[in-house]
Image 1 (spheres, one colour):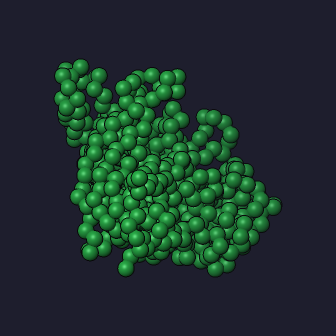
Image 2: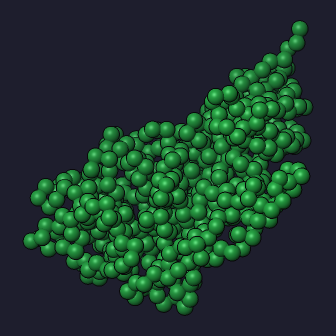
Image 3: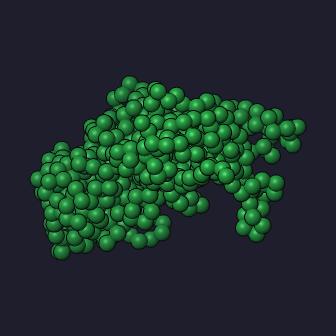
Length: 535
């Protein structure tokens, strides 16, 4: 009778760098780079990004629009698509000027970006167009600001939406798509650093040295007490303002956190939420409620309100070693709402991806873009679809979640799951085979390397094997027509034959490509035979 047994591992849980090797769940990972935990909890290869200036996007190329279609074979078709993408990419230019992208926003379907001029003496605003970047007339702007803005409407009329923005160097501005004007605030020097608008149509601005000012209702130019404006001192440097789901506003400082209750000056009440913890600049984002980073870890504001203790509210215990390594190195953050994701960016072009399932963390992973992200912003386009942009040191603006390459370059995704002992940590086993289950919409090449005994040099890794995952299968009346293959399985399975004797093992999966659409790693089945206790 065969002594072969089968162990199952469901790949879920994400990155866990804090637990000991025996505490790790089999589906958790010690390396998960350029994969994300999707909303179902599985590991999905990250989408790409591409440079942007309003011209035709390289990722928009489809085979049917190219000369020579239909092509003789898949290789010819892929070459034709890649060639046309490179032509389009070569036409896209950086935002004119010098230095990093200072910030940007989307308004009425058009994307705007700030950058210093060529000699770095002023900052200019540019708008995207089918012909590339076009200048926008503004008052003279001092250089090197860090722009943030908000889409708002002080009248309630559909035709009076506008952008209100600040940069910490110049006066606040308002822009309606045609006219760019500056707002004179009540503080000197007049260079607000943060901005928010309450549902009651009151403009809030944060200034240095802990000054929070508010305007009269419906008029962002009125700051006197006679008009309903005023000032609140918060005794610490403000690092962010964010309206919450209950119509309160969080006032984040470097070492304190407040909540502003009320709609107008008549009923404003600033309450201390935490007198010892705050938010690190650049880390605050709203995804239902605020997510941010403090020196002690990452949290959501509602958890601080729930537990009343920051340590209990922290959600980042699994990646604390990573956060400690990058302390003081945050450059930006952004959210991808359709994926329920928060992303934190570091100064070496890497970052952390946090996927939420409701209010709880579905899992952590990391990304490596090859570009340091200095600013990021998102909005909805004319069709209501979310668009996400980021800018870096090279002067290009990039659109995230576009295409299957990193602006034309191949990128590598790596998953290293926990070493699996299949329930007997000190028993030697003969590992014979692994069955990997993958969902992929097309052909994807993966490399798989078996590793044994916690990567012990006494038990060398097995040879790397390459598998070609094919997919695109669907079910009758359950898949979109012309988006799947009748002859393909709905889930691809690959048999990986192993030759190793060890107490535990893991399968390290890599994918390097610039054309393969994202695949999903689902599970492993391990075939093994127990041999006896380690002596």
